[in-house]
Length: 286
Image (cartoon, rainbow, N blue to C red; front, side):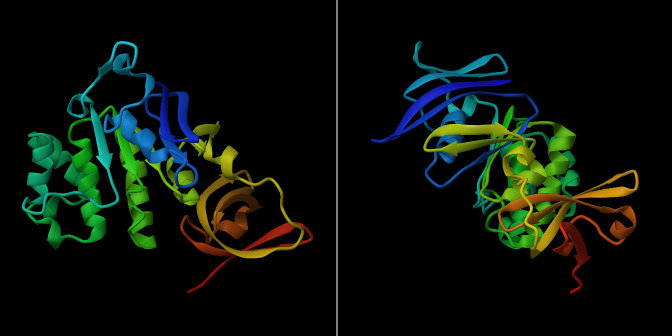
């Protein structure tokens, strides 16, 4: 469990003020406009920035306490940090990058196999694709078995196909290892796919805290509409299939007969239209 109760002045008229609890094993998203305080909160939790006042306790261990003046150094906090720009050492091989984080060959071998890059362990960063570099950066962050994994828009520089693949791998890694993860992202579909909880920050304060479904899914459905969407999830229930669809910055759910869902799978692009308030789902063929 992570207990956060901090304040930090970001600007003359902007105060970051957070008093929340994050459960162990959560995959939490920080969502909000630029300048709302998302990255600053990550930096405070990691020790890269110091709050003006407050307290941070992680699994019973005090990381910051303004009353006593204690501020645990970054290197002593069991954290992993993955940025957008990979930050791999260019003069080290993939394997050497991992062992630099922690000299544990068994752990390195396990993580490389987990992301299916074990055959590339002797390559250098310049010999890898962008997606491969980010996967290495991710498992390097996991080498020290962190209590918290911080992800600051780590996939935003990748193309849509690679981004989707790495989202799947992130979800699998989180399911396998269960490390508490905090993600900064502006992509609603990414948050919906990965996270079980969302903090919505507005002007330095958390205005909403709920599941992605409760935060983003719109209840209102127009009587006439047509749009392209991506299938995020399919769940069969008796003779029906519940689809979770992403379009633009919106997430919706729709129910169709199980028979009509036979040819559909997660990741498919579909055309959604209406007829007398009943949604019609058609797969888009490329």
